[in-house]
Image 1 (tube, rainbow, N blue to C red):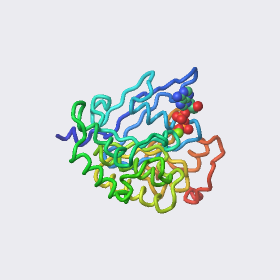
Image 2: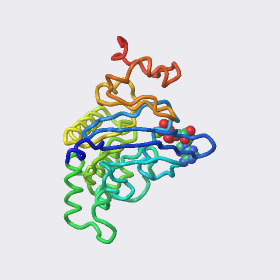
Image 3: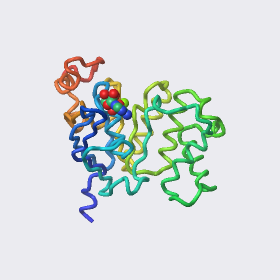
Length: 252
Ligand code: ADP
Ligand code: MG
C-alpha cells in the first residue's frame, strides 16, 4: 500500500497540443500530490486553459500522458471535475440551476441510469454548500456572474471527484463570492482533494494557493508558492512585464 500513498494525485507527462502550426502547449510535465492547491499562472494565450482541457481530454493532444491516482481519467471520468471559464459557456441555454448541478452526478451514474431522487438530493446539498439552494429552480441565464460561478462549483462538488480543474473561478465575481470560493478550495484541499486552478490575479496567489505552475506554452516552474513564485521567475514568465503589483514579492 505504500506505493498508493506515494502516488501523485495528478501526473501530466509530455503534454503537447497544437491547434494550428505553433504548439499552444509544449511538452508539459506536472506532478501534484493529494491535497495540493495549485494556481496556474501565465500571460494571455499561454495555454493555461489548453492545459486543463488537454488533461481532461476535451481537446486532442499531439502527445502526452495523464494519470489521476494512477488511472487514465479518460477511462474514469468521475475522477476529474471541471469548472470551465465562465465566459466560454453559453448561458442562454434554457436549464435550471438544479438541472445543471444534477448533471454533475452523471459520471457516477454510468450510461444507463437517469438521475433520480438521491442524485437530486446530492445536488441540493451541493447547492446548500454554495449558499444557492433557494435559487435551485431559477434559469441559469437569470443569475449574476457570481451566482453562475457558484452553480458551477456546486456541480463540481456533487461529482465527488479527486482532482478539480478550475479555469479562472474568481473572474468577475464579487468579494463575498471570492471569499466563499477560496474557502471551498481550502476545504477541498484539506480533505485531500487536489486543485489546479487558472488564476489571473498575481497579487492573491500567495493568499489563496500553496503551489504554483508557471506556464508560457511550456511549464517554466512548478513548486510551492514559496519556491517558485518569485520576482525573477515572474519577470521571465511575463517577459519583464509583470502585470500587477505583487507586494509579497517585493523583498524576494
Ligand atoms: P490562456 O488560457 O492561457 O489564455 P489558451 O489555452 O486559451 O490560453 O490558448 C492558447 C493559445 O491557443 C492561444 O494562442 C489561443 O488563441 C489558441 N487557441 C485556444 N483555443 C483554440 C482553438 N480551439 N482553436 C485554435 N486556437 C486556439
Ligand atoms: Mg484561458
